[in-house]
Length: 86
Image 1 (cartoon, helix red, strand yellow):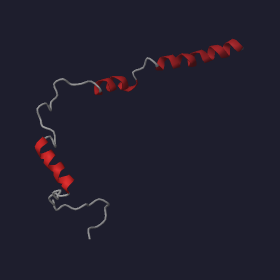
Image 2 (cartoon, helix red, strand yellow):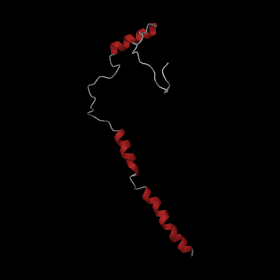
Image 3 (cartoon, helix red, strand yellow):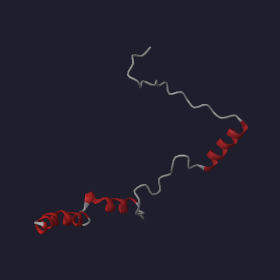
Image 4 (cartoon, helix red, strand yellow):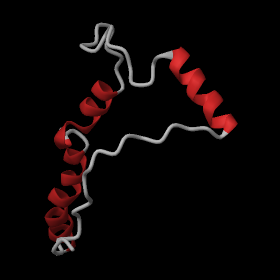
């Protein structure tokens, strides 16, 4: 009787070993792909926002002097919240 119980549990013990060989959604492959450096990116040569050093230095000087330019008003309204406009 005891050997029958042990033999009945044997398939349950082998299921755990199968989980290590499963692909499990390609998590490792995805992580490797995300952390791989693309040597020829599509955005090569495109200047980044705020990449003009002269303008950045002038803006920093204005910040230190307390004469920061006010941003242009776009005339938009915040309509989040779903309420009716007042």
